[in-house]
Image (cartoon, rainbow, N blue to C red; front, side, top):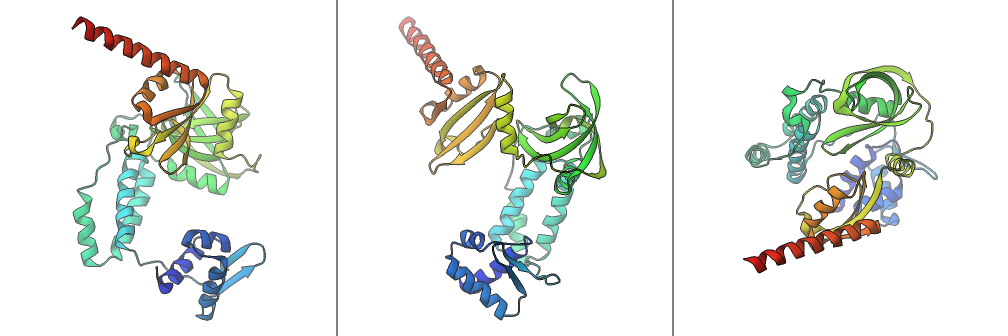
Length: 321
């Protein structure tokens, strides 16, 4: 990236947050702090009103805005691909918002770039089992994710009708802290005032939802990852499984049920929370030597036992053939 392109990229990045640390800019663009300081100074000398606050970072003075209307072909391609994923994994509120955003992106592309996207569109497909594959058959509304995101950002209390796994309808007032996609469904983590504890609500089991407008105070700095940790620590029925997978064996396939992942270069370390080891043992066999279980020891033993059973079975089959 030449310096002019880098300066424009830094300016766009400064507009993505209220305050941006110099270290963040350096990490994003692979620059030393000295280069960051020099580039920011160049933006200021060019008339861009960049302010700074000691110990916090840089910010754009209120009133200044430069719309990032320039997209590379690769950036436009990535948005098209993201749109395919959104269509399969998100509800109609998010799909409508993303579709509107994608149209705005297409509007600023040149004619050859528009033709490029048009040709690419029909050659990208996402085949994913999800309840959104059968939207017309669902008894539940399909437009809550946007409001849920808004309430998380603004810390608003949500009022909802929720159908639990026993098909019982309950009314809840909840304080949402985050959402995550797991096992083909979106899950909302929130403090439930009815149960007086943090609970996991499947978005596809919400019958109705309303933002009350009431703001709640943070009960703690609990994050999604901390919630997962507290969940398996406090729930005896859940077993923590940690394993690493060869990327070449995954071939882009998702690790269903994974609650966290760490990129190790050629391998991926993944963490799962399961209620028994039978299903995950059989699934791990598919990966053969390309999966390595770190914990628990019981899973390693079970995999060894399953492998021995299979070996004996096929050896006997060969002898009788």
